[in-house]
Amino acid sequence: MTIELKTPAEIELMREAGRVVARCLAAVQEASAPGVTLKELDTVAHDVMNDHGAKPAFLDYHPRFAPSPYPGVICASVNDAVVHAIPGSYRLQDGDLVSIDIGAFVDGWCGDAAVSYVVGTADPEDLALIETTAAALHAGIAEARRGNTLGDVGAAIAGVARPQGYGMLADHGGHGIGRAMHEQPHVPNEGRRGKGMKLQPGLVIAIEPMLHRGGEDDYRHDPDGWTLRTADGSRAAHVEHTVAITPEGPRILTLP
Image (cartoon, rainbow, N blue to C red; front, side, top):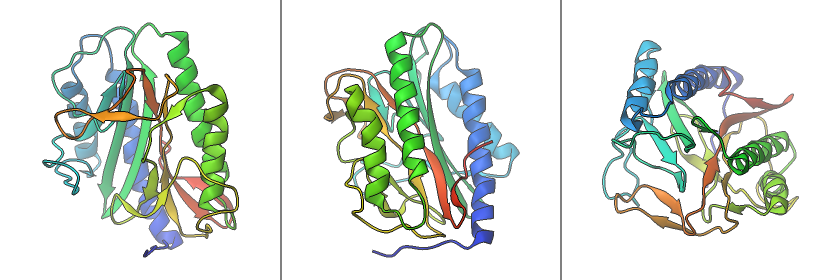
């Protein structure tokens, strides 16, 4: 497993990509309203990237598991869709739980982040799911410090999610990031404290808990080969930040 540590100057370049991702997420959330199509939200994000000289990381991405290149700029997952849903003709409805995941390259460096929110009238249980997912993310980020391990990060995430009775997307987690969107190491959303790779300055990772309201971890694939849905049909939330391990502590690169 090859791990590429970034220099402080390279982390600054990644911060620029992270800012663009944050702007895209904010613009998409602001544009989300009943009647708006997911494809229209995709266009909003693409326009923001174009305005800032960024290139979409997801568009035409073709990993080995996928039957075809990804056709969107964003992943737009609604209700029981957890991640990787293709933005198409679906029109948002009042009360939809939406998870938007966006990646962008600026000057050859990548940023990747996701946010979940409710369109219009919110079910309190959906708000609790989103709040817990965000709390799990920030618990994981707090452990992303020199001398800690990936197991510490995963244990912190699960330590918030599991006591609340939520499921967590099986077989999925975060990842290293830098010149490529997906680099080593894999960043699990569960783990044992003190176990796994030791974190050191220069490592940059995407931390991304994915929680299921129904309490199960299982998922199913849509026929498109991309969209993952909860097996029990319950709603899901997904939040993510790109985080650099620095001598001073974790630094979130995908803030505005």
